[in-house]
Length: 330
Image (cartoon, rainbow, N blue to C red; front, top):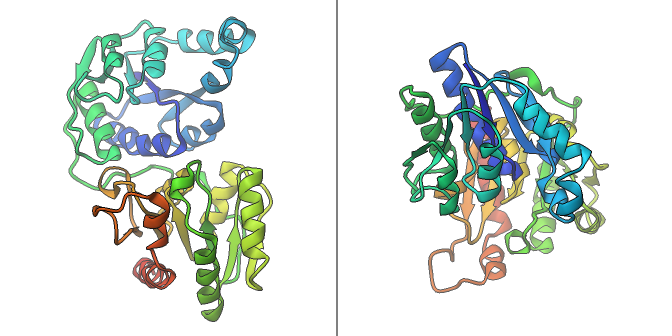
């Protein structure tokens, strides 16, 4: 069986789709997948053993100049790649109008969430087989349920396996150390810099080095400010996703805000404490082994200011949770 998956973005959403592929592979045996994904995240699907081919697209970039780019050579190449193979099924695992548009371009039975389940209701009109999936499930489990219904196999009741196996290797041998994933695309998810500095001091007292990655110039400057105030911290050079995955596998533990890289850490089973203010950990918390969620103690109350919610997460609570996560993984 040959299946085309449409899951374009974001990094966390792409990672959340991986366990469904492993479920299908275990249940069906002869299934393989091609995957349409935004170019920025094209590395990740290729790491899964059941993915035969990745088809990168650049919807985010192309929509800035749609008249030019949706008739240009990159678009034509992506469209040709989607249509050159026969597929037994197309699964839109995203449930957005843009992903449904991609699914409609392929001549094969199309599956996706029904109007009560999809993130954008109109997307369900694009599918030959709209599927009801409960909205109060974790994002990983929702996708696993979608694939099980679309491809007709029993939904496993075990913890989902991301299936990355040996696709990513540790970057190097390091002294006892930690990664702090301090950046997020949304300011409301950031933890105050003085909190990171206090956590750095606790790490230093316990003999840990700390490395800070970054993805854009704003994150680079934040990393430099934090590291510049501690003797045990170092700013990493800019890394691609595979390189960063190697670093994740080389450290003892990770502290992350709600970010796609935190979900990558979870996919690799690295002991990780993820910090959440307004985000629902029940629906999109880091999923997997060795994962700890620290929800703001003010969440669910009268306070809704994200900055106040994140400020309420203390460095000592974070450090204690990280020690417990690392001890449990050992």
